[in-house]
Length: 160
Image 1 (cartoon, one colour):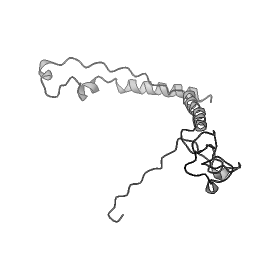
Image 2: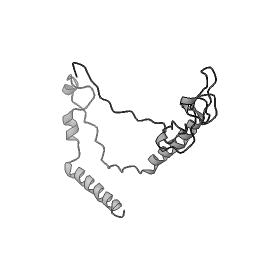
Image 3: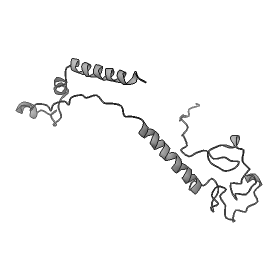
Image 4: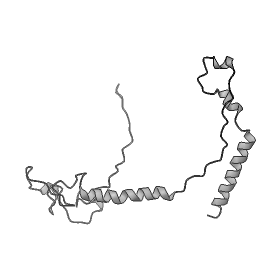
């Protein structure tokens, strides 16, 4: 745009739960808040705009009563909420069963090279594409393994 480079980025997802700007509690926003108004600076029952606390006075958390503002990321009440959320996320991942893997036979190691091939500049101990392709199982065998897997998968999913 007008000889300027413009870069569009997706918004970053926040990992912390939302914090209400009305009551300073976590888990909801001020649009859905039905609690009394609390100040983010002193924790008293008034809005932050009406606070008379001086900058030199220590802050007081509206959530835990600590000597920090209510939006401090190191607050004990936020840490407790995060500890409750994290085990649930781990439990969800454990409940999912792993996807069964196909039993594909391993590729046999390449045969020994003759003296002429060993001196070629391309030989660095890695097999060539032709050697790997020559040692692959025949396509009929791979097709048989895949169809067997699909039949087993159908038998598992049909009762559901």
